[in-house]
Image (tube, rainbow, N blue to C red):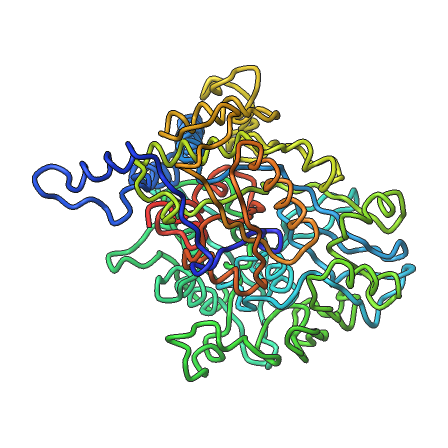
Length: 583
């Protein structure tokens, strides 16, 4: 999941063409058809992504864990070879919080919890917070942003949820569930799980909440008609003859569901926002619920089940959440009211914090990090995720190139980026430069670390894990571009006959803009020109999803500790497939 989704999208009206080398145009014209008159794909310069889809499908069903790891490495090899994502650094998360506030926490996946905060050891009447600007979705099954997930976990209870341990770590504990799942392995290799729920649960409007709501919600999230970006998370479920996922309610307090096989990250899924039940009656009372599935939660007052309910929403300005008396654990919620400032202006956010208008700020202007990092207010916590540059592989900027040539262009540009400089001067909190997409420290699914060589896989460079070395390689970039057909002058600048011009879009944050400026300077070393364009948060989210961009800032915070989560987002049917691979 993205850090403020960590994605930037480009409007088609801003799209710029890349002038392609002459021989590439000839190659394209010679390949108008495949075989005996079979038309090529509409974007014949995009990679064939069918094998990637098959790999992810196989990984989801593979019960041989070492074989599964090897397949995940193969998938990452294929992703990196496409050049569609250029990893920049692996995330950590910085924020400001008053030193006398305790009890808040953030998981390594970036989800933040505020309902058990205290100030000076006492319960709080109001906690004032900034996470981001206007949220895109408050329906937990439609949200795909980190700030949206933080709002969702305040308002929707799940069968399970995250909890803060005494030692500062987090763990997953029952929420609506009454104990851990029970499991039975079936003769066909599938596994059936049973979860018992607490009795007398209620929605915020006082109506009954039970196992039937879970069944409805999971089937809704998995249904293509809902258009959930996370519908692919339900691909681990076995399906019935009607093609729907196998989940049922044997009685009002029991949920039973069947997966294709054992799932090491099941508990992470059950605590994830998209698996949290939503109210059928409230959803289907909206007049446009079939064509606009999230409309029921577009204004304050919607029915929910968590610690808080949204009382007021002044769009683009503020949101006020108040304690939900019908939440099953309301007696242990220590904050009566959460007030959210909606802004992406780092300078205004810091000014509000310093003035005492907010108690928690999830972003800091880059020019203030050094001044703040040694204060008691400044915090850095680990994350599992990757900041990257994203190419739309169907962009017209690659028209006239073969798929291999287009990939060479993307990888060549990746060799020009000075990752260490970005970390040192913009990140400034000891992020690790990223050499490939799956972040360092992520598990391999069977007790080891994915990015360490073992019997299941040896990396292409055995003593330097990853695909990009942490250095700028101008000569390597020029060599790749020449291989793709580009000509250079005697000064190793792109020849006037084949210029490369890029439009790069980023959201309005000082850090993202600064990174774009560094990349702009890096590309200029060989004569590549780049314009930086900015869109508001909701616009670029929607542009990204629809493929209405050429080159974008991207980012992904894992939803659970398994490499499949970093890889399955790029299947051709995924709503989170920003590069439009296979689309």
